[in-house]
Amino acid sequence: MSTPHIPPSPELVTESPFLNKPESCPRSRASRRTIVLACTVSKIDFGKPSVQLDGKTGLHADIILGADGLKSKCREAMLGHPDPPRLTSNLAYRTIVEAGDMVECSGLRHLAEEPAIHYWLGPQAHAVCYFLQGGRLCNIVLLCPDDLPETVHTAKADMQEMRELFRGWDPRLQILLNLVQHTTKFALLGDACHATLPYLAQGAAQAVEDGAVLGALFARIEQQSQLQHALVIYESLRKSQTMTVVKRSTRLRDIFHIPDGPQQQERDRQSMQKKPFEGYPNPWADPVS
Image (cartoon, rainbow, N blue to C red; front, top):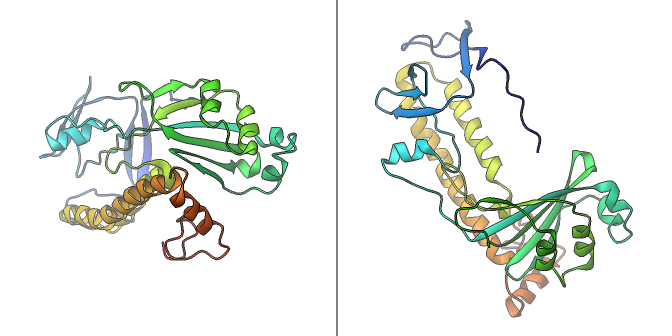
């Protein structure tokens, strides 16, 4: 992953039509806003509301949005007590291989030439691959039980260990994993507000949707007094949706990782049916989900 460029100046100025006065929001006049980068928030006052930055004066605002992720200090400040991430006993290997390398392997050529989302399901684990950048890259994610120490969330992966976990699986998956040169593994823990496992691939998407809903609500605000009501609407719109994603993602893990036996055979039988139905094992194809 490339390191994002950080401008030499810690401040950026942007134009944004927003609240200039508590009573009104003049949309016809843009006001200058400052984005402050590379700063650490040392204290949050939810009553004012305001934030204190290390080495800088405090900042006051109409509203504070805490979006500081997994180890959220905003969440702990709001709750009034420590709230560390909770382990889920799930671990993911993530890596990317060149589609051109796949084409060179006869067993993988059709996967590269006919891009699709491919799943391999097995006891306590599954693998998925799909293509990025117009089919140039193949993204591979391997889900399995977590064996990292409790305090370690990211670690350099052992290639042999990774391949051994999927020994005896589909030969095409074996060939694909042999193309991997390096990868990382980390425990799956969640985000600041609605932690979710990755089985529906919806973690980042839910954060984007949060921002979209807030943006749409803020665009309709005409008076400062409407901010609190906007947040109530935001919670009512997003809470049930994100809870559903969390529950369905956990359920999909259980479906994907069924041990070999009658339940696994029934799942496979249903998955092979050409016409999906309500309750179909793959929720992406379920006509009702």
